[in-house]
Image (cartoon, rainbow, N blue to C red; front, side, top):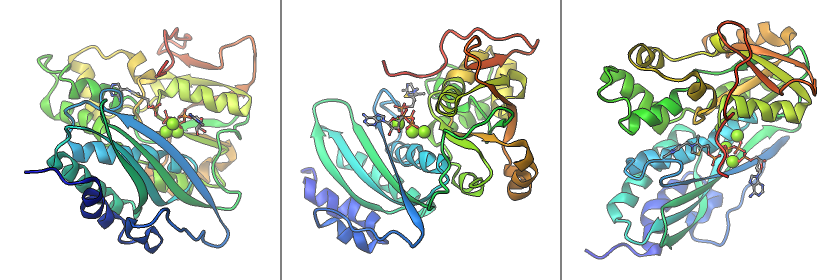
Length: 330
Ligand SMILES: Nc1ncnc2c1ncn2[C@@H]1O[C@H](COP(=O)(O)OP(=O)(O)OP(=O)(O)O)[C@@H](O)[C@H]1O
Ligand SMILES: Cc1ncc(C[n+]2csc(CCOP(=O)(O)O)c2C)c(N)n1
Ligand SMILES: [Mg+2]
Ligand SMILES: [Mg+2]
Ligand SMILES: [Mg+2]
């Protein structure tokens, strides 16, 4: 059967994702129209994902689409924003099947509903190279209240949401690198799921407006990303390895095979929030978030040009020497 044309694909598979947004004009015009709610500021971010770089070439297309959405909503969460819509640029390999694109669109449809975030526009091209997707996420935050990377002060608590390392170890699981080592199947599956389907911490980011002094999401690796908050804020950081929260699945996997602390600290793909919180705000953080409250892993210190910006203390309280601090494309 002949493949759907470019415009048929937009009409059949992407236009339904715009149905809840009148300003998307049915994906039939040159651009979309948005009306900012009174007193709100537009928050806008873009991240691309590529086959073989951000996801595995054989990953299910619905999960590729949802990862694309979620890595971007994670940046909105880091700003304390509420999602409003997304623009989706797709470069499909020339031989990509209708079935692959249909499953990709079905994955998008799930997250459009889950996060109340319609596709309001995009672009579709064919590429001689690997599949490449870019998503621009739009959100709203009350004027002047977005969370920034630049507000951390010496004495602030450093905290993370959820658990760290699952995404990086989950990539190993998804690649089959934990198979045959005695790691239970369900632990492998739980870790792979964290790699395939990150959970943007939108509710937490929104709840921490006015309480966190700085925030970002952890995509490249905890240590490297903490370095970005420190650089933006003009502080140093000290965190304790033993305080970094690990999931039950990661702890089980560690009982069966060696998983380097360094992979957990620097592997990335976490999509958790990294927060600095003035100690006087901590009781209110716990009161607002209850069981979703982040875990304190360290403290911000005065900028000290003699010391490294981010110091990680090992289980003996000694500074760790890390070969790399996180993911860099080049
Ligand atoms: N090519 C570019 N042109 C303009 N701005 C860019 C470009 N690449 C990155 N930036 C900007 O640099 C800053 C850092 O980008 P980066 O991609 O590291 O952030 P991130 O999206 O939070 O991390 P990650 O991409 O690992 O999820 C952001 O403000 C981003 O908008
Ligand atoms: C197949 C495969 N190999 C390696 C990785 C690890 N990885 C790739 S990019 C990135 C940082 C975030 O991306 P960016 O900075 O481009 O937004 C990380 C941690 C992966 N996810 N999939
Ligand atoms: Mg980015
Ligand atoms: Mg990002
Ligand atoms: Mg980010």
